[in-house]
Image (cartoon, rainbow, N blue to C red; front, side):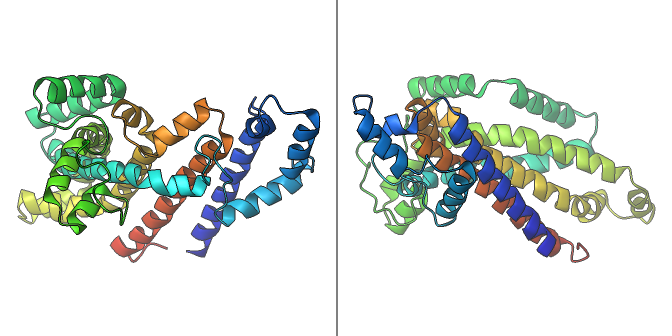
Length: 330
């Protein structure tokens, strides 16, 4: 466990080094972003020194490292607020969207992959392979636009862009930042239904891409197990096919499946940028995109570090789950 923590710590350190270097090589002058292009040379020089840019790079990195470890990402030029406060405001929206998308991917993708492997070459197997292929090849922005056109514009089955309709916007007290949870805490069923109608389409879209990955990997893991000798032995002993598949084969793929689900969740956290833009979802992906277009490097680097920390945390959680599922793991 200590070795895992050390490895993750070094990974995080490497992430901070990479983000620091990116902030220095980007063709954006951070001083001009602060003082403006009409500032005098004296004002520019004063800001340059105040920001510590006159110091050696190793000193700047040490200062950057200390600031990040204390949760100080600087101030956003775009919003005028501390970046950490901005992230606290936008991250719950991305977390809620990615979590629901992952749940959809797991609840459908895992059984689909298991059944496809158990009935290899059958109709379900062929359908699962087509679903996975389309999920990998179809552009997410096109699916998002088509989904809005059909389910919102034509059929009216779901809510439009944004997290809530105008009527309920700002009406639910923020407790966790997760609009579905907060509306339940407030006992406002109208707000809950409205929030659900807005999140179900983008979450289903992300869930479909998660489903495609999870079902394909589950099928691959199951095929490997079903061809093992212990499965043949279990069948010879007269065990039912259900017991062979779920009690023996599926149990042995749980550990690699944990990694697949964790990677899928992390990918949705950092890869939902296009989805958030299409659906006007006020999450971290949209925040980083707007900051990048505005040259707001404090916000960009802050958001990037948060996503990297999420991946590190998910790896640590996966390692803990390994030991829960298999106490023999060291």
